[in-house]
Image 1 (cartoon, rainbow, N blue to C red):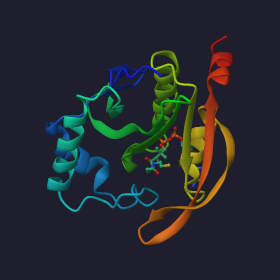
Image 2: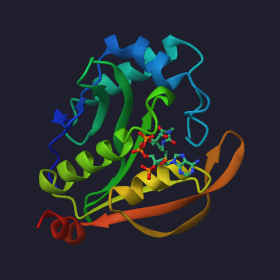
Image 3: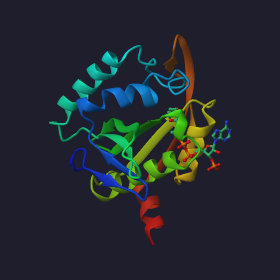
Image 4: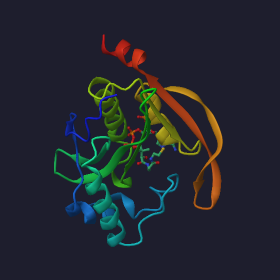
Length: 187
Ligand SMILES: CC(C)(COP(=O)(O)OP(=O)(O)OC[C@H]1O[C@@H](n2cnc3c(N)ncnc32)[C@H](O)[C@@H]1OP(=O)(O)O)[C@@H](O)C(=O)NCCC(=O)NCCS
């Protein structure tokens, strides 16, 4: 795996770019303050823009590390920041990375989630040279599972009682794409 860091990526409708402190208000307004967005995430909705700013500050610092892969999702059409996507866990020995994403509710159902995941996998396989991209979702989070399916991932199985949603311990359904499967799609 090559630790190439958070490079600017472009799709038909989106730019994936590094986040800055100036993004705090949009992060808060557009997705991070919404409890519906965070319903199936391991972090609670932000209670103020200061929370968003503090998290952004730690993310901005982390860009010095080439092992950081963490993008803001921006609409090319009008420059609005609509969400965030990142690599969470990574295993350098097996070349496995786990990815996650969140998009503001106003922009759901327009294909942006799938566009992000496909772009992320293309970068991770092509440039970072990972062996496998994995993602997981709460089984009740049907939209997220659909994004993984539409992006071409294979459903692998249910990991029981492995994450906290608020104070409830819940399952995660795992999906993944192997390098060989991604290469097969390029032909
Ligand atoms: C998951 C998320 C990124 C999806 O983003 P999106 O831009 O709406 O995704 P897409 O438009 O590419 O695809 C969503 C798909 O889910 C489907 N869908 C949405 N809600 C659904 C539901 N309740 N039942 C069945 N299908 C549903 C949509 O119809 C669409 O599928 P289609 O294209 O076949 O019609 C977005 O909902 C989100 O950010 N949620 C909150 C954060 C989150 O849960 N992140 C993932 C953690 S694992």
